[in-house]
Amino acid sequence: MRILCVAAISLAVAACTTAPPQYPTFKYAKPGGTYQEYLEARHDCLLEARKQTTRTAYVGNLGAGVSDQQISGGVLVACLSARGWLQDPNGFGPPPGGAILVGP
Image 1 (cartoon, rainbow, N blue to C red):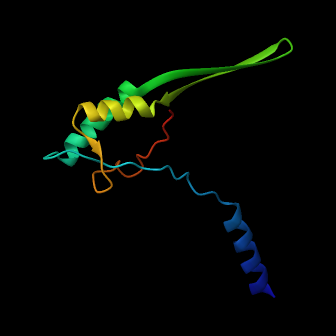
Image 2 (image 1 turned 135 degrees about the vertical axis):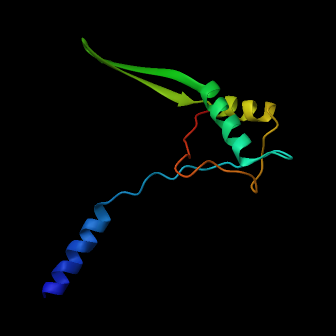
C-alpha cells in the first residue's frame, strides 16, 4: 500500500510540473560562414529587430499598462538575409537556450 501511495504522489507531482516552452527554431547558413560569424550576425540583428510594445487596459476610471519588448520576425530575417545568412534546415541554429519567440 505504501508503494502505491508513493507512486501516486510521484505521478501527481510529475503532472504538475511544466516544461519550458518549445519555440520553433530556424537555422541559417552562409557559404563559408562560421558558427561564430552566425552568432555575431544573429546578435546584431536581434538588437535591430527589437521593438518596444505597450499595452494599456482601462476599466472605468482604473487603468493598467504593460511595457515589453518584442522581436520582429520580418526585420530579423531581412537583417540576416542582408548579411548573407539564409534559412537552411541544415544550417546553424541558436545557441543552447537561445531559442526565442518572434512576432510578425
